[in-house]
Image 1 (cartoon, rainbow, N blue to C red):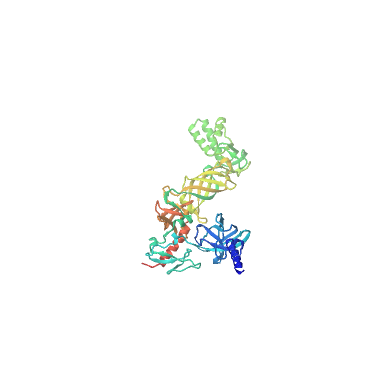
Image 2 (cartoon, rainbow, N blue to C red):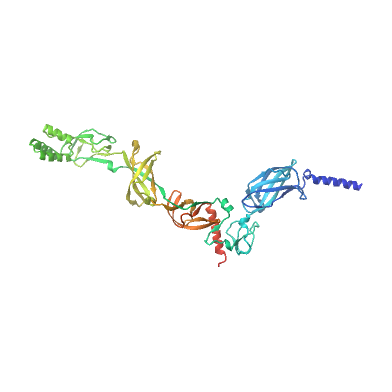
Length: 504
């Protein structure tokens, strides 16, 4: 009877082992590949096992997956996780990228035959072999560096806080150039390192300045009284009127006896046929402002005149008109001021540091704040010889055509001057290639074999995203334009290693 009972129990136990998912007690997870490289997309294969560690070949439905560094009390540091389809029963494949060396937990929640299964496995991420592998043992070890890239070295082998071995630094890895580093191809790609060729080119820069609109001094005119008299009639009676050269401005009554004497002398010379003396008298009257039309009228009538018409000396807009009809004026009084506003000046305030790049004849683009969408083409005419001691700026005169009379004297303007830094090609690099700590400027030169050398630079003029190199580089060399901050960190570490390493 006992033999029959034992046989029955053995049969039940065998069935349980063959179908462990029917009894969920003791089911868990086991990782099939516990060691993975860091910073590389990898696949973690996790097997469903029973309490004795045997594989369970049952279909698994994953509900959730999480990968974090909870084994080292850093659960907040997570890695991306995605479950990949697989044909293996009882196996879960998780795709992830363990971004840092150390221990990582893969936390799974799933169901087997509708029953929930939860648990986690631990994997260890390490540096790739080509980054951490040691050269042949015959090479002399200088020191050991922190595997996480921290500025920490040790003269003897040790482990960091996460149990990772410090990486040996060998004598043949130390570069001849201080601060030079050698990077693996993978690290170069991961850092996004980009390089460009150092070349000669002409640098053009855009000088920005503010300014104000001013009258063109060559297009201004002033009508001044040359004798005393009274205004009998004003033909242009208000400022802002546009007049043309020769247009009648006013009719005046002559008070000055000098003009009347000259008129009598002119009439007498004509009557006595003293042509030379008459020509001299007529010239004197013209200097008093008597127009030729009045001289002709006196020659025909044979009598002097007490009233004459005064014409505009130049075309333009009346800017000032201090006289009114009936007013008395004396010799030297200003009667009219006109300005031709079809072309104006913009007086730009150029910073002292940009002054060397600005030359007469350069093109300029001027915009105005009341209509920023409209732009006006201009030309640099003159650079004033004086620097404003308060603003450290220099006035630059720019001629601008006043299209459709849109501009106003005194108006604020924004100016862009197209300036050539040099007429000859100069050695240049992108600004992104330069690391500037305030005291020195450094660029990294890419050499064969993944070696990057730091170079101290002496910089010159800058134009946009390019800068002139006065010393430190040669044409044809390749400089790093992207990823140079990572290379700089590696260089600083390498410099520290060389400083604390054994001295020959």
